[in-house]
Amino acid sequence: MSAKIVITGASGQVGRFLAGEAVRRGLDVSALTHAQWDITDAKAAERFVTESDLVVNCAAIANVDAAEADPDTAFAVNATGAENVALACARAGASLVHISTDYVFGGQQRRPYDVGDATEPVGEYGRSKLAGEVAVLAAMPGAHIVRTSWVYTGDDGNDFVAGLRRLAATDGTTDAVDDQVGSPTYVNDLADAVFEIGEGRIREPILHVANEGACTRFELAQAVFEELGADPRRIRPVSTAQAGRPAPRPAYSALSMATSVRAGLNPPRPWREALAEALAQPISDRQLPSTP
Image 1 (cartoon, rainbow, N blue to C red):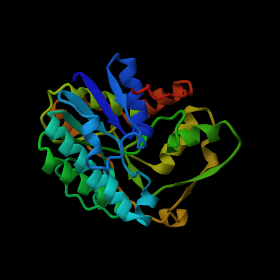
Image 2: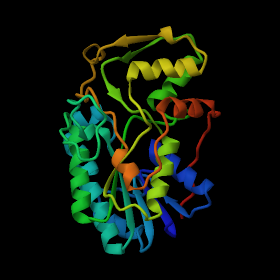
Image 3: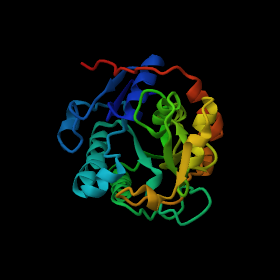
Image 4: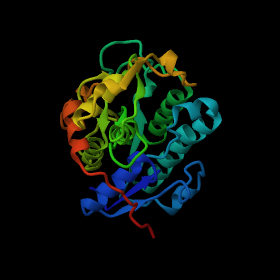
């Protein structure tokens, strides 16, 4: 593992968890929020990246509807910003893991997408993230792209599972779409893979990291309630059209880790097993490690 881990976007869901996990593992971590490192500033990286660092780029416009409404900002962060990070890492001699998304795929097929499948994003979020992948590998061919899917913490965040966990403790009901399929991914398993990649043994440039299997949002919501002993009938199935979200989303974006496992990553565990573990954990309040 590198001497220091530098995390961008450290106030976000994945960045915050990675920073806390790095501290728990006794690693030297510099966790930087957008206010500390704006990756759209091409010169800012020079202050934070040095030789032998492992940089994990979690900074992104990840709100799909916000990206659709403001594609210029989405591309500035998700594409140009990602390129800035990669160029800085290449100049400094640092390693880079760039977090990407299942939304680079279009959703036309009905088997889990592997690394070599055609990318056909249907919205501005997916298009901006795909442009970021291309820019990162052009600037730094030795970088790693990690595509992941439907990431959740399940505890103190604003993710889908965390929201359902809070709802399950009440008598409320909610809707969940039953025509979007993906691979729910526990952030702990994503973190394990990122640290494994950071050890430097894996050469494959693009990797998928997701828990095994696929389900609809509706099935995931029901599973959360079942794990928590709440009545799954409180979840109402709706279509994507009925949900009325502004941005298009792929109807199918489940990920296969077949290439990733052949490249050396540990095989994924089933999504339901990971979900059960996540929901068995007490709700935490993760604080970012202090950064000089």
